[in-house]
Length: 231
Image 1 (tube, rainbow, N blue to C red):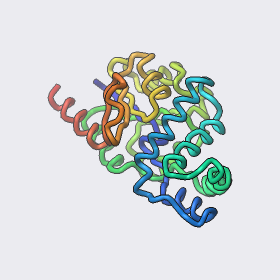
Image 2 (cartoon, one colour; image 1 turned 135 degrees about the vertical axis):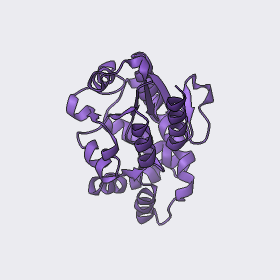
Image 3 (cartoon, rainbow, N blue to C red; image 1 turned 180 degrees about the vertical axis):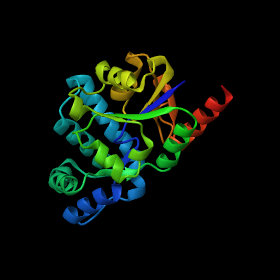
Image 4 (cartoon, rainbow, N blue to C red; image 1 turned 45 degrees about the vertical axis):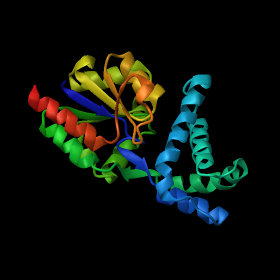
């Protein structure tokens, strides 16, 4: 294998749960526990998957609403409470992008993969600013390049965005891993062009998805570095 491609939001860069909790608490007077967010994020991802199953890729706005509505429901908040806090969460996102926290160990893992000889890059459904988010998170320096759907006009799971990245990296699909967090976007898209998809699964709930999974980025990185050295 010669390359490892990563998704950005939800994979390399995590949502700032503390800021979401503060926005909710500022409106409702009670905030969810930051520690409960990891499990609740599964509900958010499941809601986005259901939306895509019925409406194709959906719009940015519909995916946002589906994600946060299900996320807050999993944290014990009602539909009415979601309606009350939605504007506050959006305002906080507008002030500073909510997906802003580098995944634990991501920088070190990207650097190790690069030193081992992998091409390391990012393919993201974003708004044209993901390179700045990655730079702010201290990750951009470890990536060979970034393909941002907002700049190329193609979104995952469209196979063309994956092929664009493969061509830029100079590698074949079957020589490449793609790591992401949303099955119909990341796994289906990568598999469709012949890449080896890896689904991020912190709590081990996706074992039946028929693809490789990893609890976190460092665990995957260690496996791939070891495989490279053994080759």
